[in-house]
Length: 193
Image 1 (cartoon, rainbow, N blue to C red):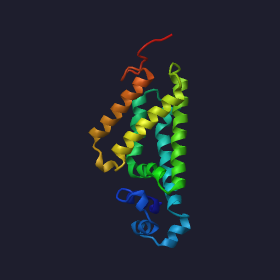
Image 2 (cartoon, rainbow, N blue to C red):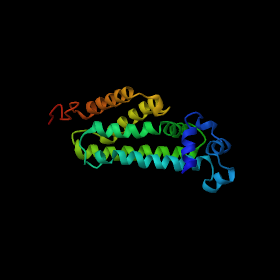
Image 3 (tube, rainbow, N blue to C red):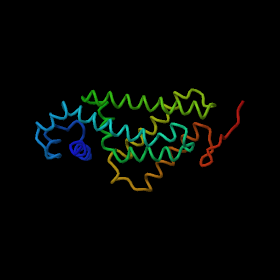
């Protein structure tokens, strides 16, 4: 949908608080009536765009979440790549937590809760020694979210491949530490009773 692509592009230069229907219409080269035929308002348009990105991120993570892929680093790389590709939107959705776009804020919170649940289920299934997988999942996801927010929020044109890989490696080592895995082998580091 060209309108949503224009909205996402606009978020690279305009904060979520400064979005207006007029700005979106100018960016998409459409009339206000065309906008309102498709959406109830800015929140509704952001929600639709956000939903499409969530589907992309879950699809990127599916091989690891389902257990089809056992390695963590490719999982992190694919999820981070999806986030990076849509960094301004994801940052806008996170920023909506503090602003007036309540539907977007609710969607973002629900996405993070869903992500915590999915990762926790995978941790429980594949890393049974991890105590309190719900808390560990939340911690790992929250740390990754903050790093992505600050490092990737401005979009892919502002992040080099070297920076991207550095971020993935740092978060990967954090995951290995919490899951008691030897990095790169992903074998359990210590055997406990």
